Length: 512
Image (cartoon, rainbow, N blue to C red; front, side, top):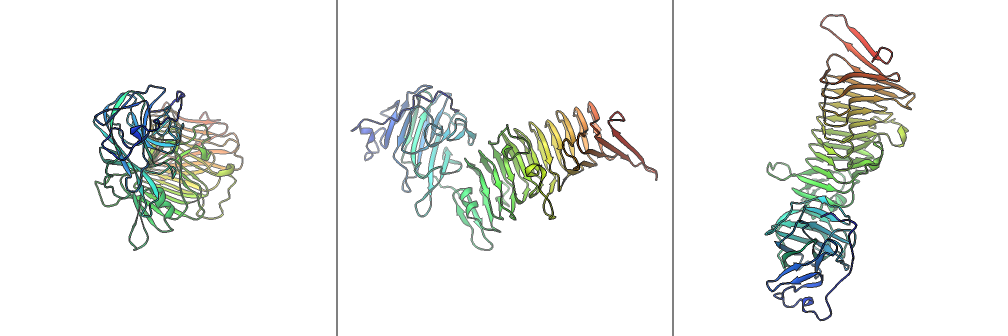
């Protein structure tokens, strides 16, 4: 359930001194193990009836979890549309908010929408909704040394996913309801048996298991392989990769669930000289800044590659509010057989930081390759390129249902055997505003444009904006095939079956 401005009155309530509900010795007592509660009545059956409203939510808080008792469960008996939330909190708990809302430090999984909430009024999709008869579980995974590391959530004792513990003291079970409801609490439930979240393999040594992906990535060394198990790997903060490692799903198991990396911020590759490989992952970001320019890092939401080299292979990447993949000219990008989208902003952005001032004296800089990539359902640009140096090669790719398919300003782009279908504005747009002396050119071979208002648009206004489009390419069902403005040029070089060749140049002066 999403939170709003009605989080009040927020009070830190607890039972009166001597209340038998604060006792922990007799676990058969209704409410035993509860040390704080508000707007909750304890039934003889052992259940809890929440009597809260849309401004004061009934809640109960249990004794702190430990390595000996790391897990609890809630069975929903009677629920309402607004749902029940379970999770963990610290010493402070309030009647004016659900678990995971920012009113007090906590993390929560909500039954109405399956959302995961971590200090925000909105949650990110995490697990399935829960209803009357379902058992919602929450637990903490401890290291061998007794350090609390990871939060797990379950539905009907089946694992949903892993989340790094937000704070070391956040170990108190908390259950709350945004409306009248009845639930049975089991604060002594047994922790189900789970496979490890992931493991790290170094050479021929035995793999080491970790309870969450952030710990595994932080511990991995150059050359290591980090394998993520099937399930949801959730992050409240961005996951920074600073070593030359591979992060992949389980190989060789056709029925294995695909690892889903879900975060509120970017998955960042940002260390000079490192080589990172992502394979067989589903990366779903719910962050990103829609107000940031498409050449700004703040607009990223999925994978943000700032330095080094990154290979993205057989992945699915989406960003609810931001851009799927952002790569700077300082990073070598190679994406293959990967689906990008839907995205709240752009699909893939390649740009030079600092307005194109980066020099590319080394051959491994500025070389970007998209091979067999599908970009679909982006609110703005499918592939946006803004780099004065380097090159981008796009081969065997498909851009579908984006506002603009490809926008280049300025850069050199080679398109081979790629298609642009159902774009809502331009299929390919090249512009050279304020780009004196910089190349702005797209060369197309065996490409298809279909069902777009504008096929090719070349806009000058500073430098040369040029699109090469020979007869190996096709444009179908577009309102306008070509448009040139401010000195933009579209070259058509046809080569019929004889020795002679024809050359046509479309520009503003020739009517576009």
